[in-house]
Image (tube, rainbow, N blue to C red; front, side):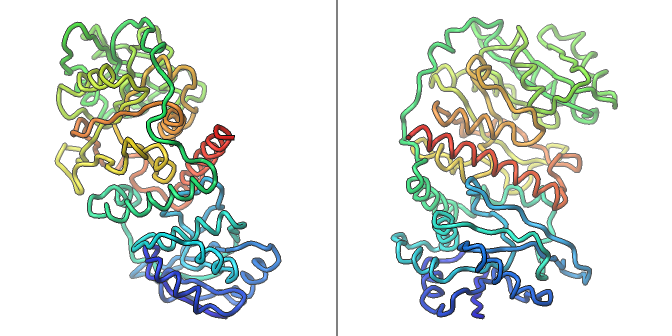
Amino acid sequence: MQVFSLQGRLCSTEAIRHIANEANERFFFLYLKPDIRWVHFAQERMQHILNASGGVMAYADHFRIESGSEQPIPAPVIDYQQGALRDDFDFGSVILCRTEAVRQAVSEMKSEYQYAGWYDLRLRLSRMGELIHIPELLYYEQEEDLRKSGEKLFDYVNPANRAVQIEMEQCVTEHLKAVGAYLQPMQYKSVESYFAAETAVTASVVIPCKNRVRTIREAILSALNQVVSAPYTYNVIVVDDNSTDGTADIIRELAASHSNLVYIAQDKTWHAIGGNWNAALEHPLCGRYAIQLDSDDTYYDETTVQRFIDCFEKEHCAMVVGSYQLTDIEGHPLPPGKIDHAEWTEENGRNNALRINGLGAPRGFLAPLLRTIHFPTTKYGEDYAVGLRLTREYKLSRIWDVVYNCRRWDDNSDANCDIEAMNRNNLYKDRLRTWELQARISLHA
């Protein structure tokens, strides 16, 4: 059985073409990391499954051995689906390929990528046949990157990786055109009827929270300290989802001294972040524009709400996304500092949105329009879901300056997810992309 090695998932088209030319057996293994050790008869098992299934590629669950340790840790991966378009989709370190399919895919490659060669290949293979996940622990791999999940979260938007991102966007755009899901630039539905809706105030800052006694006061005060010019007005809507740690006491205290603070106490049923957002949207005091503020973050300065209002009023769009800086809990900047999601462009942002894991922050929504679709009742990915849905048909505008402090600390929900939580989150976002991809294909059909 032939084995070829790539040093990680970033590789050139030339490297992929070389492998296709050298492969002369029915299947070959592709190693993305060195020092792979196999479970007994596992190679034969993978070949048997790929042969029997007729798939074009197979990958498997495995064990991970972290640097400095000899104790194997099970590392399951997730099923591939139509919307699994992230360029960092985790196949593990061993991939079994059908040589005939790879050769055909390579023969159709027109672009010469420096970094996106592997990404281009696997997207092409996904259009040709099934990418099979084998839910069996079949090999051992060495893991050198021991950072917590929250520390890896922003790698893809690090400015140092911009050249990689540009190639990945080109690659996924080609794929969307091939499957009939590409959206033409600058073609949007009108939102004028939603702008005409009467609302109690111009804008509402929406803060969903649950057990945030350590950070909720600072979050609310950063919203209450906003300065908005006449004739515009704003309020702050805090939705507490049955906190038990004293969070509600702080909200009530601040509401007693601030007339523009609206307090919503949720009932005992399931709400999660999405449901809390829906409660704010449906409140009679919700403004025309609903602007996000997470309960452990703060606005950059007192101009954030005004800048969102100005952008909505000028652009007449469905959604506005700002830029943020990463800080610690005390507000000290953390690397890489400013996160502006420069991968979003007016021309291709809503196509590239199917590749990346988020659209940026803070987010503002045209509330009367958002009430026609609502948030999914989930505690993860709810913002990404509505962002994909809105950008399918409506315009998204950007504020490129920093308007938000994204505070990283131990109690962030994504600070240190275990592999099961990471897989659950990634599987859900892939599912969101699958539904959106199908909707865009149907839109063209």
